[in-house]
Length: 129
Image 1: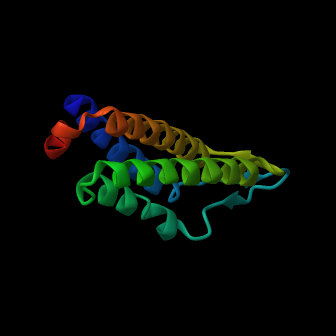
Image 2: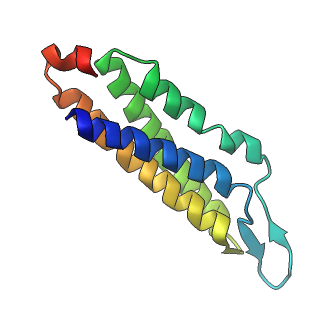
């Protein structure tokens, strides 16, 4: 379990970095024009890595960490719906959109897996996590 959790930590950090970097790339192009759209507030989305790192390294209680992972996954699903709607509504998605969507999907899946790992860990192994 410990090695699987370690892999999930690395995957989450990589996905959060990919998500942050994707918002500096062109997200979409308006139909019928050459206008390329970027994220309005790219730095806000770049800081997705901060809650990921906080949950991974600072929270030690496994139940609290599991709840935070679940809430992060729900927030990620809402963000995925929002970005899918915003990126495809009268626009052609570009590279930044696809990287952001893939990163959010990876984050959500890894949060659910990490939540399951935390809840399946026996109480006596809690000190190892």
